[in-house]
Amino acid sequence: MAPSSFWVWVLALVPVALVWGSHDVTALLQHEATLAQAPPSTWESGEEAEVAVETGSMANTWIPCTIEKQKSTGFVEVRVNLGTCIGCETTFTVSESLLRKIELDNMEKFKEAQTRLMYDPAEALKVITELNRDADRRMRTRMYLNGNTTEEVRAFFAKKAMADRKRKEAKIRARGCPQGYQELDTVAKGPDTLGLSQRQPTVELCAAACDVQPGCMSFEWSIGGQVCSFNKVAKPDKRRHAADLMICGRPSGGQSQAAQAASEQPSVAKE
Image (cartoon, rainbow, N blue to C red):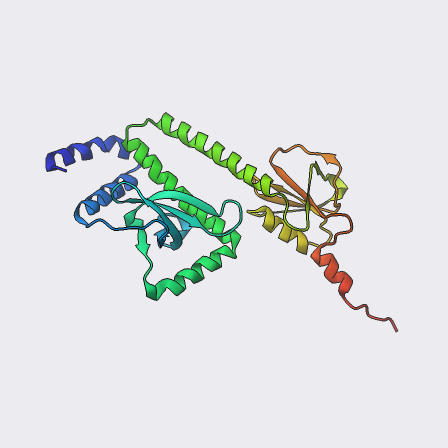
């Protein structure tokens, strides 16, 4: 890029910086300058690598990923797969400056980190959320640089968020309730509930919480709100209201792990 045309481009970014903030624009300028001087990297499809979280509570954390394909110069499409839970996988385009190759000496640590996240769905979903937030922020910046208005950017991301929610809900409903539960279409009210609820990021974790909750025979999990509520009855009989509820109950005669453990305790004979 010729010096004169470079400064014309920089001046064109001033309105973008005022609208969106200077941090992202500065980072992009630094990245473009780095790419102009550095030799191109070679990334193979299927290659294992690590991608950095840029912002938030996990900033500068390196996450295992797989290279999908080389995009335009300096950018690579990567896939992060951190387990079998719904939402534990994502694909996005990232700058090469946020990627690093796995050295043979570090392969064991790479595999350990990958395994740890796969067995901790709550942590895996937190990582995916941070990576997706970074990817969306980069996309917003790029859209502003391409001349999109604030209204256009907001409309695009509102549509994207709705599509993501629908896709996630469809996957969750297709999978159904976790093992040991059957899906129901009615909810519990009043005395049929345990009056307890907690936030759980997946329906599997909601089921696990019900398993160890004394007296829990069914649960209701909000897909959007990620709130898990516990019930005393295995088959609630009240009409549902919220459309995004996943309602799961134990088959007839089933017991929670807490109740089963209590029943297996040896009784103490009275003298």
